[in-house]
Length: 387
Ligand code: NCD
Ligand code: ZN
Image 1 (spheres, rainbow, N blue to C red):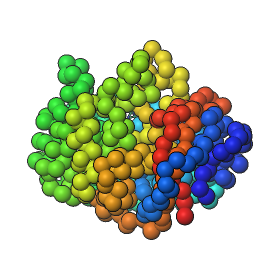
Image 2 (tube, rainbow, N blue to C red; image 1 turned 30 degrees about the vertical axis):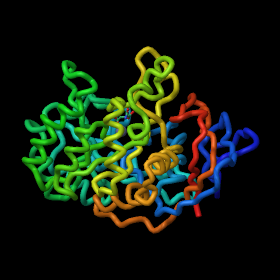
Image 3 (cartoon, rainbow, N blue to C red; image 1 turned 180 degrees about the horizontal axis):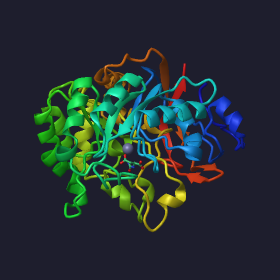
Image 4 (cartoon, rainbow, N blue to C red; image 1 turned 90 degrees about the vertical axis):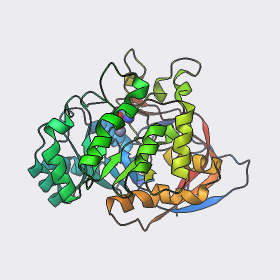
């Protein structure tokens, strides 16, 4: 299958047809168009995994899951649902079932579940999680840091040390939203201050705990991850933090669809992250942080943080690596470093990236509203396709 979208007409498919064909559910506005101006080139990659993904639940889950499943073999699924959040193994197992039910019939996509760490999480829950075979990590949201994080951790050293010790024992990675929430700290400095006040002391105290610093945004995070012991501390990197700097938030007016957390930073930070991921280091791997919100929740007086990039992510990562002449390092970043860090087998399936221009749909329309993808309406160069 080369392109899962109509190229010459806009056709409305019903939900079952969409699932069977692996189309996104709903009408596509602004169909992907194929044009050719540069010589065609193909890359064959081991099928990638997405090590940081928001799939939501209910209608939103039904709407978005096929986008991730059409490119990625596995994904670490974040537990920050609108309450109830996923704080127990039983809830994670039930959530996994609802994701599997929402998948297209022929999909082999595997959701890897996570638990939401709270002040109340017990070490026993970690044992249960490990034994379930369904839960692969625990997510730390500092309380109030981002979407649905109000039940997150208020004092990691005061409340969570026994759980973290159990996680180190069980080889269960801690995934970290790395920002302090103190309103006195400038929003652009929150990652740096988190590293200094929480992460650095944490890895010193528990050197055996595996930690993934999620969606890194600064040169400080790059330096921190590179300074730690390889195999114990790593980072996921999103397409938006590789391609955009904070100017994108104000380009010709306020741009809610470029707003995510941690917020985009200065150009020097973007460049440091690009250098890190394209260096070939095993410490960095693909995590889209694809975070869909219905359009009216983004375009309003107090818009939600989150960029919806599931369908464009692979094209964008390829663009980043191509721009610095490092396409030979792309596969390790997309398909090896993450599974190696988690101690999971690498995928055996393959995917092709074909250098052929295509236009990102302006929006995806569903019964409950629209979702606007990253780079809506823009032309991208690399198009993923199954072999
Ligand atoms: C995420 C969401 O909407 O769930 N938003 C975001 O801006 N990245 C939460 C998160 O990962 O911080
Ligand atoms: Zn996220």
